[in-house]
Length: 72
Image 1 (cartoon, helix red, strand yellow):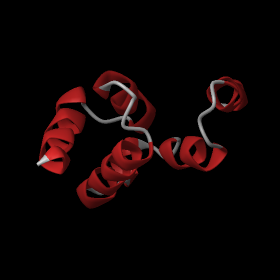
Image 2 (cartoon, helix red, strand yellow):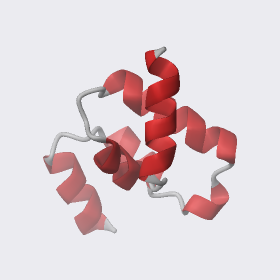
Image 3 (cartoon, rainbow, N blue to C red):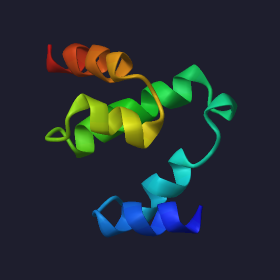
Image 4 (cartoon, rainbow, N blue to C red):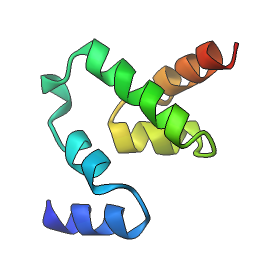
């Protein structure tokens, strides 16, 4: 886990974000996942859906759905 934290923070990902996403996905509620996606899209709109999905451990379709909703 320490190696993953080091690699992800080296790429510029904030430590707080890395630590939050290391919580096993089953322990996060749908509302928490949606809030994380909305926050990531607001903070990093330039990132592709697949990268956001990888970082947050959600599906790319979830990210795409929220991107479309927020772009309205």
